[in-house]
Structures are given as structure tokens and as C-alpha cells.
Image 1 (cartoon, rainbow, N blue to C red):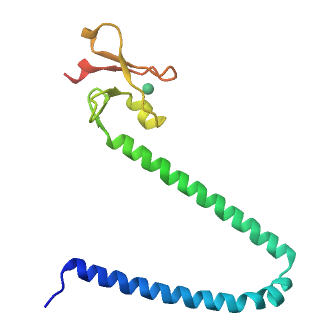
Image 2: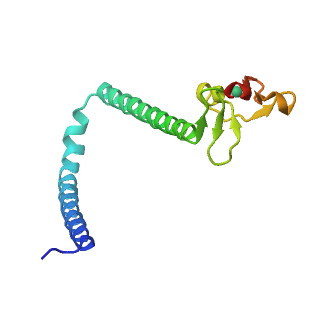
Image 3: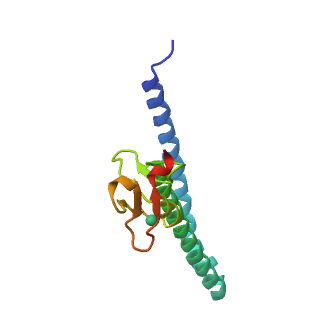
Length: 145
Ligand SMILES: [Zn+2]
């Protein structure tokens, strides 16, 4: 007889939690036993230069981890931005999947920004221009026809 899936997962999670609790208790006991000895006899023997080097190493590691988190976050946001658009290979225009608003592909890819396109000239020309003053890239919708 097999147990239902939710019971098996509950039992497995309970056993895992019990094992983790016992390990944490043992580590805490060991730490409390070793801490006074470490502070009284081992810690004063470590040279000051070594402690400064360790502190600098921890600061550097913290900085690198923060930069890594920032990089991962920004690359994920970029991927989401690109995933939310349809790209026309003929016109080069990026269209948002939900709102159908046309956005500048150059700004999306190169500058990581969402810039809307505006009609350039009359509506019949099919010309669109990036509304960002630094970009102003022209797109022609008639190219795709
Ligand atoms: Zn642009």
C-alpha cells in the first residue's frame, strides 16, 4: 500500500526538518563550547595584519557578491523586457505583446530602455521615429510589406 503523495511529502519534510534541527543543535553546542577557548587563547595569537587582511578580504567578497546580484538582477530584467516584445525582422520594430505599443528596438537592446515610437510625418508614410531625444532612430513600416 502506497501513501498519498501529500502524506509522503509531509513525512519527508518532517524528517528533513528534524534532522536539520538536530544538526543545528549539535553545531550550536559545539560552538558554545569552543567559543570561550577560541576567544581566550586562539584569537589573541592571530597577528593584527592577518585580521586586517581577512577583514579586507570579507569586504572584497561582499562587494563582489553585491555586484554579482546586481548583474543577475539587471540581466533578468533585460531578458523579461525582450521576452515581452515581438520583433519584426523586416521593419525592425519591437511591438509589446500585451499592449501592442511599438517600441524602439535599438533602445531596448543597446540602452536597455523602453522607448515608444511616434508617427513621423503623416500616417500614410508608415514612418515611425523613436521618441527618445538621444536616439531618434527611424523605422519604416512599409518596408515590411
Ligand atoms: Zn530609440
